[in-house]
Image 1 (cartoon, rainbow, N blue to C red):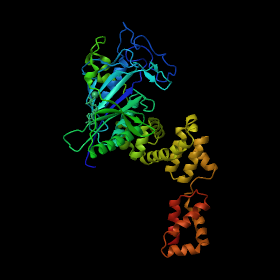
Image 2 (image 1 turned 135 degrees about the vertical axis):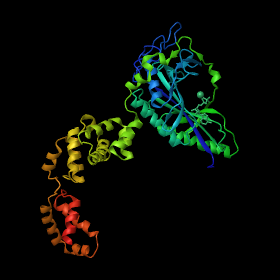
Image 3 (image 1 turned 60 degrees about the vertical axis):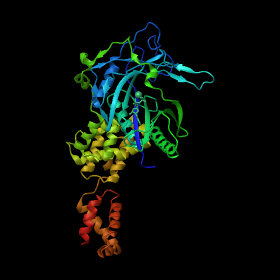
Length: 474
Ligand code: ADP
Ligand code: MG
């Protein structure tokens, strides 16, 4: 069973964030709850209307193309993809067929075939009894389609790709790309074969509304293909849906060929010569492209030498990345303080936010007080227990960490003179333990250090205690 080669290619649709729709000036507002308000004769397909290309949407796709290192088309055009369905008022969808805006490129190690621009359909509601309702607010919303080569070999790899694409769309600010809201829709093409020279029969799985669904559906299909083939059966090329509750796929329809759609260039739209349009030039596009996720990843690793898990948190949630960068702004590139800051954000602060997100939303800890806390830790003025306690206080009440430490007697006792006196007392009170240590039982030292922490109410520097104990017992 294990000698099958799994092959996966993804087709991903993403709604683009623009002010208006793809070919008219109806608003593109995914949050509009009232049905059929953002519509006009153009997106409703009334006869005699003419579409106009949305420049912003074209720029969005070209930016994606630049980011993934694809080739931006010089010549491009839009085509009509003909089919009948109530959610497609014109009887065709405007898409791109022969001349996509972007060809090639690579993302998350996966080779891309193309990225093109089309329009979204309306949404139908079938669960209202014996009739269906159609909402055209989404009809004509700019939709990007990205197609990968069949070069992915596992469900995990497919999910990693989809996550990286989501991150890219968000970084470029071209789409929100929530799978759960249908803003990004992943279709997985899957086949298995024992022959590395020949692909097996391909099945396409649709309506995957979460990363988890992408992973589960691919795993399910791969297992199903193996079972069918191993029991001597054959697979048919088809489109399948994903049943979220049963976690199974089911047959929807046999796959149509592209000639079924009778594609032809839309005669109502102008051809585009990208190199003739100033706003579409790489230089102009790059001007409003910020740092890309993978560049940020590299920068965090090189500049700050953070652990991979921390880097992923800061890259994956850019608001945490910005918080971190603002926090370390006056650390003068001190690696030790930077790493401390990263640790305290990713473990302690995120823990507090998880438990009580409202407090953070209402009033995040001010950079300067968090930075002051980190500096105190760096200067050995606080041990980690006290630092965590102060952080929790900053989280709920705010304040000045130095003051809090002083008020609560949390400043770490680094004064050897004072500690030596306390330690001498502990040694005098615990002759049996001292004897054990002298007999070579190192572990007993831990007990004495514990006593020292207790005597100083947690404010001693444990490292320092250990040193002084060792010296005193020699
Ligand atoms: P179709 O003509 O059926 O739409 P395409 O060649 O356009 O097929 O490919 C659509 C998607 O299917 C692409 O993402 C491609 O990588 C993927 N794909 C093609 N052949 C296979 C295969 N044998 N196994 C898995 N994925 C495949
Ligand atoms: Mg295709």
